[in-house]
Length: 601
Image (cartoon, rainbow, N blue to C red; front, side, top):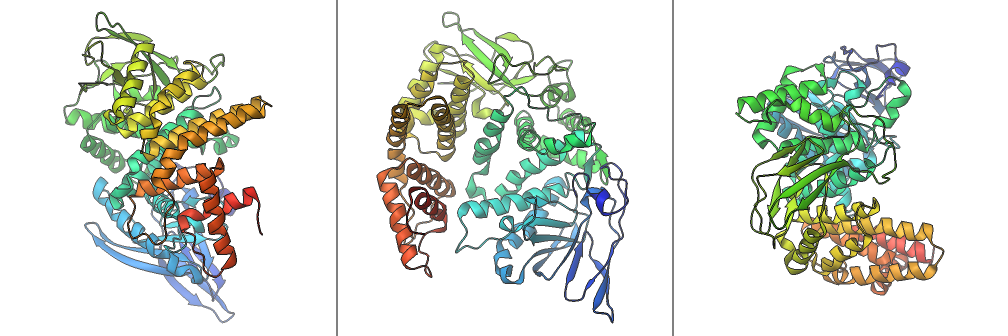
């Protein structure tokens, strides 16, 4: 019913701050079961073939969290005993799909305890149901104690589902469980602060799933799939602040977007980067404990985290507060790029900040902070890593500490993408970075390489640097083996391909680009190959995802070996449809390639 559909189901004060308890009773045909937010208190079968199901009275909650399901589903159930009491976890679906719920039950039962332990705030209900609803409109909905899912996001079959499917199931379950704390126990005072629900849930889906599957390297994936991706969404003049003033119902649909979810979660990651993880978690515990069964604004979050920083003797710049710093990130749209200019004679470094927009002539709306941000700067060079954070909130500044670097060494600002901004350098420094990538690219971390690639593509798109710099940087790509770096390389080249296709009728130019793509991708394609069904070696998770990305790209650009392999596998399946020998991870590329190039149907 989120955000404002509860009023269509029953008379109510349908606003997030107006919490109430709900006592639900429903009449339904006897062959069906009923689920709601609370456990069943009593069910009475009547003589007319109908049943009356009464549920326990709920805890105080916002109206949009009310849930009711009536179906003939079957469930798998697990009872958990932990430090805060017993919780019954159930996963439910159509009877013929019951066996595909096993993995979901494992994730759901384990993660609900993980969140209790992490934040020392108990899950307040005696049960939590996870229900797969056919043709469910949303991906999932976090109703208190009765979470609903699209079937594809709760069901997993290890014989027919891909690795990506498995990861999606885990992430969505953990996302919805995170909402039981962020959004359900503590709700936004008004929709302005929706990001406190969705930003936290998006960040915690990666944190929580990482505890279950540390081998998935989810924090690397977060950078590629959320952090760097939402930077593109936020680089246009019609973006909006994370904390957006909502005055009309018509605005609500527009805030359930990547800015609220992915930028919100990225800003939480940035905060966790400039304070110790233990301080961050204790601050969140303060925030949750203070507002249980109530509502909060972003200022309440800043207050709780700021108090914890003070308790842990952590200092911010003089005459500032966490509220002052973070408001520059949440109360204005967009983000900065930092221009780093070195004086190679004196060793000095000057930094300047500008709003990053793809269209430099665009006129964004007025900002309460004049499009200046409190930027947490750190530096890394060939030989040193600055451990201290330099706060930068002026248009430009001379940096006097943390940048001790020789004139023949490269300098990298924002190591491991600790801050939510892009970085540009003077030509000489770019040249040294490019040389380092060619000589030993692992001198930069995987996240740093992904950031460099993504920055240069987007700086070129904004006409801040020459496009030739992109291809100079990519000269080392034959040696690159990291999934998230290739994900950003291909994302950047996809935009260039779109521009060629839309702005030129010269087929020769597009053919040249296609030839470049084949030459670029061939070494990594040969390195990864196709997944063999007979293989007994379990690939590292990111290698599996990487192979899927590279093989899909190779076939899309008609690499002969890839297309031949896809046609061969399709032919095998076509001739023996009862025995599909195509690996689940390969099926989409095999099917799509054969549909695209034509063949038997």
